[in-house]
Structures are given as structure tokens and as C-alpha cells.
Length: 132
Image (cartoon, rainbow, N blue to C red; front, side, top):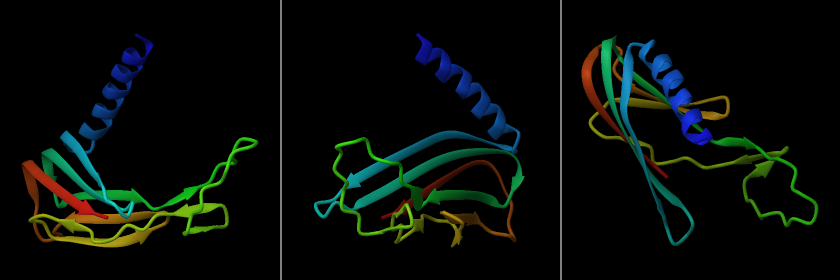
């Protein structure tokens, strides 16, 4: 019961914060395919209802994570991309179906700007983002 109540409270806060930005995310679906080589193919589908005109959305995907200390006696995984107490995840082959987009690094995140500075969107829009 506590978990349900916490979920309900978080849902209200998240819903209000997104609506205050002029849009509501109606669906956020993530499909992850684990490949034989342990790589991941990820597809995110976002159904967004814009209540105000916008140029599009931003999607920030973290690629750098601070490593926590392991409990005594634990074995450390062999990570190929680890430095200065951080693990780095490769995010590549980013595609956004039917939308203009640009990708840049912003701190510890891949920043995907989806939309056009010359065009506004309003109402129901769907964004399908694929990456590895």
C-alpha cells in the first residue's frame, strides 16, 4: 500500500511539472533488445500532447555514471570504459523517425534536440527514438 501511495504522489508531481512546460507526455514506452554480443538496441516511443506551441523536445540520455564502492568481498566487473571513478556507456547510431534532430554532448549526457527552430508543433505528436 505504501508503494502505491508513493507512486500516486510521484505521478501527481511529475504530471504537474510536465504540464507546466506546455506539454503532457501521454505515453513513454521503452523497448530494449539484448543482443548476443551484450549490446543493447533501444527504442523509445513518446506520445506528447502540446498544449502550447513548441519547436519540439529535448531528450537527455546519461552516458557517464559515478561508480559506487562495492561491498566487502564483492567482485568487480571488468569494464572497458572506466576512468577516474566513472563508467562510460557508448550511445551511438541515434535515429529519430520522421523528425529533424541534432545530437551533442552536454556534460554527462547525450542531448538530442528533436524538431525544427523554423517550425512549431502543437497537439498530439509522436517521437520514436532509436539508439544502441
